[in-house]
Image 1 (tube, rainbow, N blue to C red):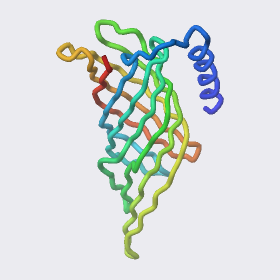
Image 2 (image 1 turned 45 degrees about the horizontal axis):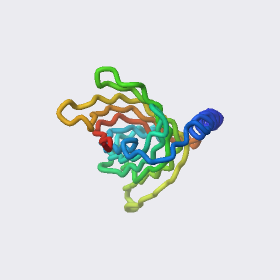
Image 3 (image 1 turned 90 degrees about the vertical axis):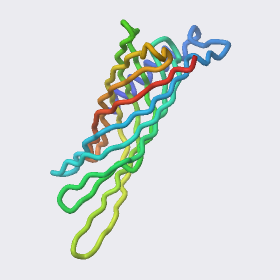
Image 4 (image 1 turned 90 degrees about the horizontal axis):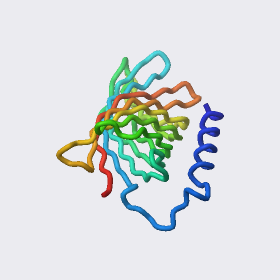
Length: 184
């Protein structure tokens, strides 16, 4: 997975930062922001938790259909399995966005990037309650669709499937719905 991220990153860097890609003036219409609510699954050992979290991202297109964005997730609700209660405390990272041209207002995209995330685990038993926060890092891969809203042309409705994968046996995936605003 690290090799894949390195290859994608090097390809993007050579395409994005080539001499013909540098523009002398800044174009604000290349900026976008997203807000999503996600229902996820955290696979930990033999248990599966289903926490809810919010996701915020902001980015800019560096070329048509190619963007770079930063993102931040924060937990909204936890899930309980056996004696454990688990939630996504936070996640943040950077990603490369590869987006298709719009067809009747519909676009598909792929996000490839790096994520650092932490999970809060609350355990209650006869000895009491204890909370453990564990931090992980790894790859983020997302597939999504955007539909332009006819009433508000600079807004798009989005649906996304995402995976956060660490090499520590922890997998966070989930579906999210949200809105994107393109600066005009």
